[in-house]
Image 1 (tube, rainbow, N blue to C red):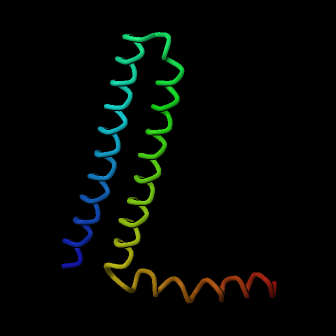
Image 2 (cartoon, rainbow, N blue to C red):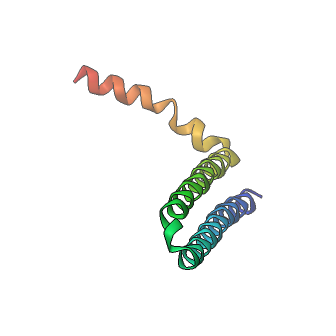
Length: 96
């Protein structure tokens, strides 16, 4: 069952990235088309395009973080196994 959950996490990450790529591609294509129709408005169109692409990238980043956190939570040992060891490693470095 855990392997299937990891497949789900991988599919989720792929869908997030694919959706963002399609969205930004459409924004870029439509912006170029608009600039070719109205060259005098190219600056405003480019600014709007960059803002929209940045918003899509922000949402994509949050979605990828959520997907990766879900992947780490599928098997609780992945986080629980490494978290207690971090303070011990820090204490050893301080004592040396």
